[in-house]
Image 1 (cartoon, helix red, strand yellow):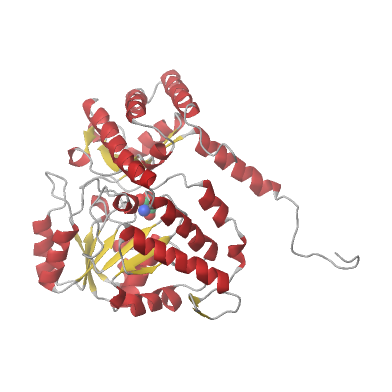
Image 2: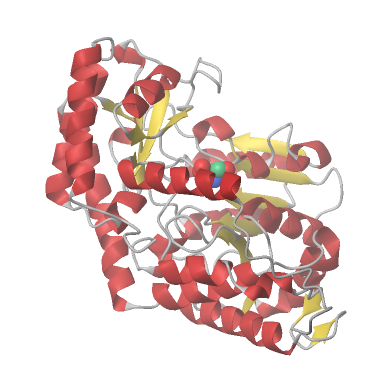
Length: 420
Ligand code: DSN
């Protein structure tokens, strides 16, 4: 650099305050068992791509049709992401720009609905998502929301009730897909119901995207009009959203994402999505998806055998819900007890819960992250024993310390992010 020139941009100075926080978070992820059903450990290649210079680029618009110059390489990255996700899911249109699952859902609403149009979706208490019409969310404020519930006896989606409601309500859009439903979702049955009442069908596969990609859950592609999802849960990519659909919807969906609901796309995240889609096409990812479900079934059955009541009696996917009301402990307290032992889960409403969303009668457990770590059947039984021991000794500090020691021993055998 010439003597009098100043380099204003390329500071090599470390931001110690933030680096210390990142280091602490890395240690937290390394030293705890992450059983939050919507979390995972993404690959180092994904993390490296997110931390790339692609973050510097504005690229409003779509590949080869941008409002900025200099987009030749980010165009390539976005096209690779689109082509790969279409190949992965067998779709013929994809929008990889939504910043999140909520943004993907919102864009579909903007594409096809007018304010006050009717939506029929799953109740939040029964497993639905807040962006499917919760009253404080934009979806609940701008649209007329009707909810279907699970059957109070089986705790499974009652397709007859969905059909009856659809006939009565005549919604413009039916939403299927959930955040805390542990069973297979029958997209074909939803399609039949939507056809009977002339409604659009949107499948929100945020939770099960990786299971669909890995052949462990039936697909919604070719059945639902719109499939929305996230890339960071079972799909194990960067935090972000996506929309898949028939290409006849390309124009309205592209417009609804940009300029309808978003501005500049996050090109570093889109490139990292492309990395994740490639990883999810591998045969090892198929094995991973199968192991996630097998581990979930093993852990769920273990806890059931220990006397915990499992919502709907079991699981077909990567998560299950425990109803703790007979155990005399709330979801809120159970989350704290397990956290003190190094097991991170979330409290969760269960169907027909009489407690508030802050307290809850249940907890949700998922196996996507521990399966990424390499844990299998044997570890699921160890984990089941530790969870049982901790919840049965919730007020005994020395026993909770013993549970923590067991978690530490388990985690030590399955290190993650060693090269960071
Ligand atoms: N998708 C939610 C979850 O399942 O954790 C968060 O909104």
